[in-house]
Amino acid sequence: MYSEELSKALMGFFFGTTVSSAIIETLAESQTPLGIAEILASVRDIRRIQLPQSAVESSLTLLEEAGLVTEAGEGFKLTELGAELSAKLLELRTPPGK
Image 1 (cartoon, helix red, strand yellow):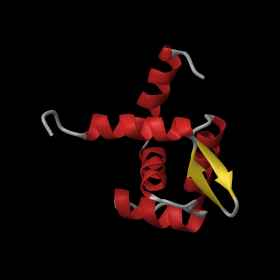
Image 2 (cartoon, rainbow, N blue to C red):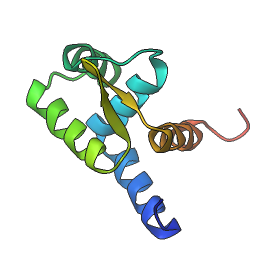
Image 3 (cartoon, rainbow, N blue to C red):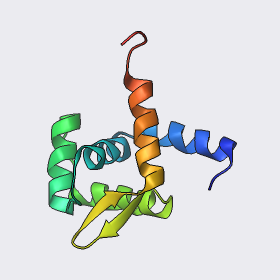
Image 4 (tube, rainbow, N blue to C red):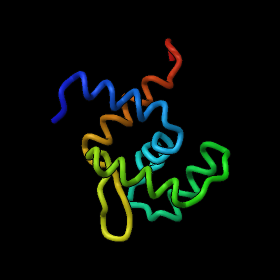
């Protein structure tokens, strides 16, 4: 879907973006689509920060435009591309040898 160069740039961006990467992580762990309130609670827990709901909504908009998440009924879920990104982000966070 994306060129290799663009894929690497997107991965670097979302790896370094606290809220977006926490959303990706949250949706990757969920077996069902999640609503904004559930995503917000999870992001706050994962990153141990208080942030406004608007931060999650803005990040979801970016993630949706990038083709990484999609609306599913009353919530959001990862797309196939989003699941690939999630796996790569996990690789980047896993220390070598583990």
